[in-house]
Image (tube, rainbow, N blue to C red; front, side, top):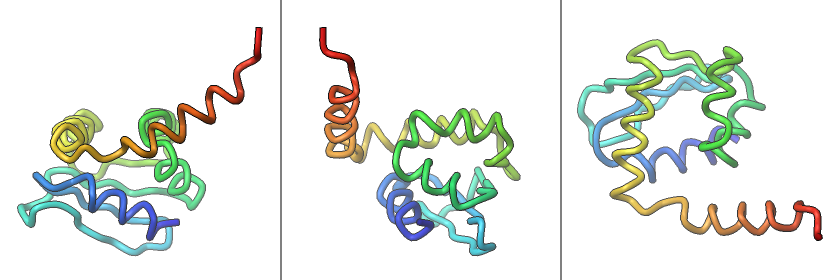
Length: 110
């Protein structure tokens, strides 16, 4: 799952840089080649999967549960980096449509 998450992060982070250490110990830096202002460790494969599939809903939970640890910068720096880049890349639109369909299927019909 780390390959899927890495691909997502590479598409997301075009301005600035983010360093990630995956649960298997592998590290990568995504972004524009500038020094990474944020660095995080992802503790387990389940956290990697959750983050890759629905980052907006799971990032806060994973951070609060200690499954994502910030080793450079704060969680606010990571959120600012993601927000800045999401506006400019337009990524997530197809994923958002899929998630919306799933949510609508799970809602009880009145």
